Image (cartoon, rainbow over all chains, first blue to last red; front, side, top):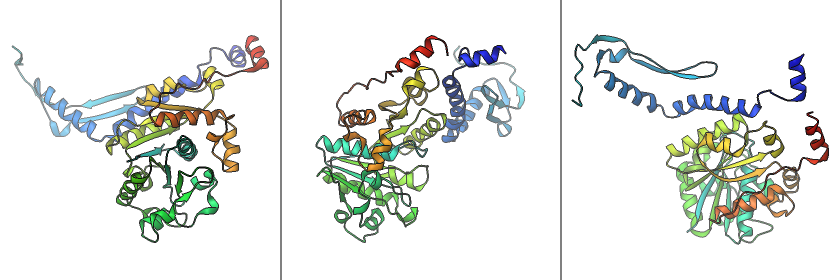
Length: 93
Length: 263
């Protein structure tokens, strides 16, 4: 009943403009990633380079993708580790 | 040497053809030599919006295939001596024109005209590729709707991939009353999402339907709000700085009362 009154009075209902913006934001994350297919490939290469400083990984089995949830988009990386490096040599030291 | 500007959108029905007709007429009214090219082969409409449909003899495909000289296919506008239309072919198929044909045609036309406006078909297929092939600048038309803005974003990416940088946005059919009550995205919302510069905002205006009925672009009607917006856009295209028209909506006494009562 209260919801009905609120909807009649037009108050506190989320404005449809904000729904439009939020839905656009999510859909464009995917669209922009697919417009430049190199984006994920480049990201993969960078990831391999950085992670290889710390551990040995299976580069061929590495998977990077965008996963869509209800209200967010997540970058999901599946990176199989072959072995850890015993000592990490800090390049800066 | 003139300039080639493509008017594109991705989504259909957002007002590319209306924008091309009004911008072209507006530029001609400012004293420029202007040619409009309709590249929507099979679905030509710029001729009827301009009110020139009865004068067509040759079309774009006749020119690119060498059936006539370019001069012969250009239709002179009823109102302005410096305004011409190159109509699309209605019966041939879309593959009849190539991107090389369009580049050559645009280069030839900009020798003689100050502005060459290319009306792009909806979609991102061959017709789109043809329309952008010879262009140096791009205007993207969108409406304040999720689907139109999404497609506009796609177009920004595709233009960039084809070396057309810095496209500008025309927001069409905005309804200030809906923006005010939070039921329509506002100008900032769309600029924020698309991250491109604004060229102009055209309010929803019933007169656009009337002007299309008559075949007289709204830009020539001094009482039309959309017409005023298009006159401003034409000036901005020439490099003049013109502030946005006031979109403040006069809600009227009845609506004011309703709002006060919380209805």
